[in-house]
Length: 195
Image (cartoon, rainbow, N blue to C red; front, side, top):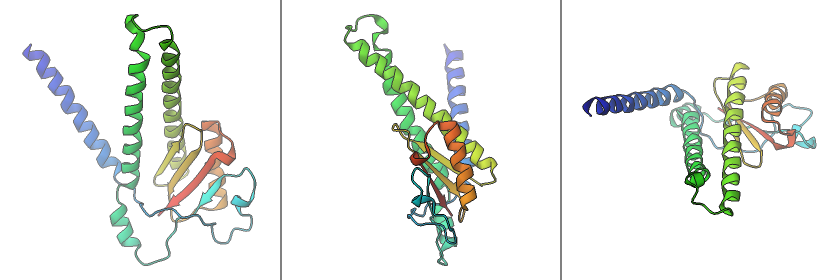
């Protein structure tokens, strides 16, 4: 019995250590200024005027408070990512409990519909999570320091990129990644930059 307790305690410590390391690793992201809708300066073809185009929201700040904003916003991407993952984990647990409710065979036939719906929703959450991770990785490979993708149940995708501004070409590249990996149309994509 003691050996099992030691093994369980060791696993708990490893999980806690991994969580701390992941949190510390992800706190390098900076941002936190609220995004406001505005077009990028100097763009002749405004993307928001094109029907069905991805929306670009510029959150750049021309004031001298950027140093304070960086200090206040340290860990923005990590905090948002952790909150998203925490909410998804809770949803997964609830849906898994519903999906497994009839495993003992005591649930009525009418509950099978609920079980099937729970399984479909669970698969949807897994699909969205995988798409978000892929999008974030590929956007970072474009040269951005950090990126965060959020895909809603209605397949709207918000992408937040750590950058002082985004060109129309960068927005197009990010939108292309989202279209290919989230299987959504351009009108469901919103791209924001956070400094």
